[in-house]
Length: 123
Ligand code: HEM
Image 1 (tube, rainbow, N blue to C red):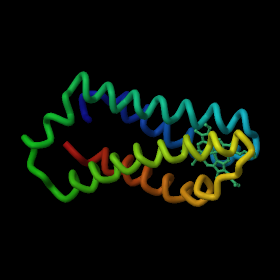
Image 2 (cartoon, rainbow, N blue to C red):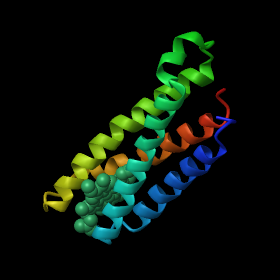
Image 3 (spheres, helix red, strand yellow):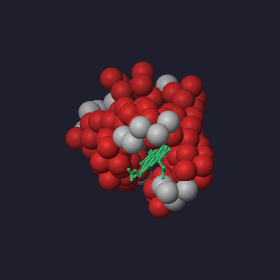
């Protein structure tokens, strides 16, 4: 993403928000606001990249390197995990403690970190 350095800044910001959100997981309102904002910004980045650059359509035209493959895999996984975490978060907010919500947390952070690192190297 060399033409859009601000997207990298936003992407790092989202990761920091997720980290802070996890650190504040006992402060329900703050946790929910941070996580929903981080997820919204992240999905906004994906939407922007698709509208401005047609990233999905560009995939068949690019050489499929292992790095690009891993990046796509991590990116899709993050989006699916966001959906699962929002569902588990709503369950928690309703008082039905979701075990999956807690167990998924380290994996989501790890996979989102992998997505961030690989995003710096894919062209
Ligand atoms: C990337 C997304 C998220 C991660 C990694 C995450 C992580 C966590 C973790 C680790 C906990 C502690 C769970 C426990 O100890 O059992 C927690 C609690 C909670 N989460 Fe999330 N969360 C995420 C998104 C959300 C979202 C989107 C919502 C709301 C829609 C939400 C609502 C809650 C609520 C209500 C609690 C319980 C807080 C409490 O009662 O102390 N979370 N979350």
